[in-house]
Image (cartoon, rainbow, N blue to C red):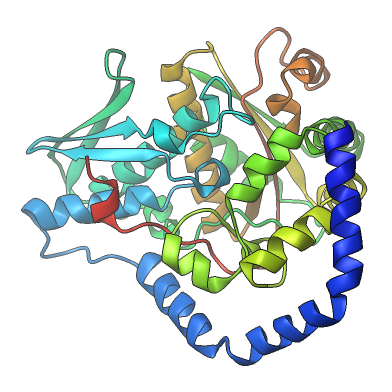
Length: 374
């Protein structure tokens, strides 16, 4: 990979040459960042606020349901969705302008993300006295959620929506109680999706081997690294301005100016450093959940997303954190061996999620509802 080596050497030389200046700039940024931090905190409070449960109807209610849907996770926080609102339904359409063709060439993650948004919307509808029924529209590659009046029920999954986050940190290493594991399994149950929960240390070490292999393959792919970097928001100013992507502080990394972030990214984002991080994170986790749809098509990918989101919301309600470690399913050549290793046979694994109790991190942001309406 000559191009990658040349870029890395250049970055190291420039990093060493500019180190005094970059530290000075970072120091000034820290001193002048109060306004940016206040703007970020205000955006967090607005984005992740609990919504009203009474007094909403018509367009105001539809807007609130869409807002709850946008709090779902998406690959690289691309928010790859559009919402079409009608009197008796809300349709979630794929926004292909926000796809990630390197890490997600068949749009698998994109349609899983639509499923996550659909589940949030259904939970929110239920809390507001509406029954939501999801159906996949093959012609439009969209999820149509029909809405009809029902008795309002505020479930613990709905109440967890404003608190759910993908927590990319080390957990406390303690096991999850059997009763809680049962509740996670029940929440994610579906005839169309199989869930495998792995909690034994040998099984987790086995998963770790696949994660490290997959991460190494991705880190050695310049196109993957470039695509990931495009979705990183290195500081609060960019995070608030764009309202999407992976905010560096949400992964436990410091804030820096965007130009410096790109420089440091090349210098520190190495296979060795990332693998060491994932070793610590996997070994601190209580378990790993592997999701697999009964079939490999868009409709089942949406169903996988719905099951995962219920799993994540139930985990949040129990004070359990989750984070994706999808490398074994994103590297296509690894999938069959990984599937066999976790007992899925010939099925394609869709998602790999670690879970456990741990800290909260600064949350990611979302674009306003008006930006995602079709």
